[in-house]
Length: 421
Image (cartoon, rainbow, N blue to C red; front, side, top):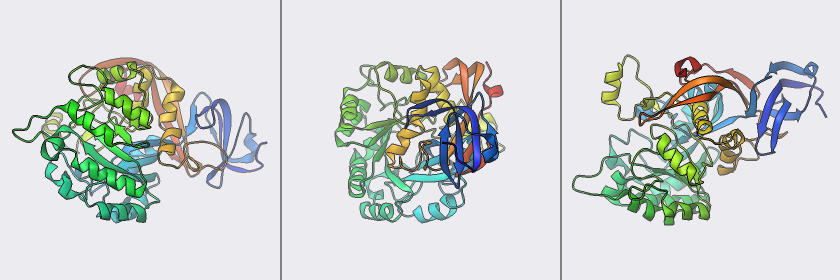
């Protein structure tokens, strides 16, 4: 039954809501900051504002599971949360490891509270938090982890802390083995929160230490439990899902999946089409999709290309954002409803927020992302230099967060004209 009065009516779009199984043309009514109704046809006369979404996708508000938005505190890593969020068509962003037990208060006060985007986080296992760790690896050893303080901070900020972030990569393993991951797992168990683990080399190996990337992955997986998250399955760096020896998916990855460990793409500067094809061909699909945008993916104001690359080891050769990462999964053969699940219902479930976000069921938060699929020829480039020409581009149109409408005007969104082949 159509509601009598609503604040916003999103009319005539293709509604894809994996949580409810809905996929078809429908109208979405929002009232008082929640979803009031989703019906085949709701009269425009009942709405204070009508948004014509004919020919577009109407989705539960997108959730970016891997963001870096602790602006001004995490060095160049932190981007403005609304540029990554609502102004890019995404209603919820999850900062991966920016705030720590020492800095979570500032994150709450200066990032979460003023942002129009819903901002959550996976708290860093390290007291240093998400500083420019690629420059200072010694900050990220076992001596930089305070289990008790991090457990206390996570519990005290349970409204925004939804997991624990740590790294398992060969640079760290050459210095202190997997001790940091073991401590991160201890924090995870004591808080009852998932452990999110970065795979793929981040730091250079310590002089004189030869580390086998395969052995790092093999030693890691037995430590993981149901609900934990392996990130960067498509990484171009050693120490990811693909064995350096066999060129195939590690056998232990299958064991992790059997345990209930999930996979987050964590696009960033790591993404490789070659590795993605191998992982997907093996039958492994990501559960969640994070863009992993940070300040090292974009040039600083005034930098030339050469200056930017000389100072920035992570500068991507390809522009991207969350919807662009969705486009790449589409080009790799994943079905659109599967992709939508990775940015809506699945991340909501991962964070145990499926009763609040990730769906357009009546009573849920009035978070909606309106996207469109552009047809043409678009060049998609990974950070290994490979280029793929796609016939479809998923582009954000607008976001509605808590019933408030936001235009997509973020410079972080690569436009169709930039990508035209």
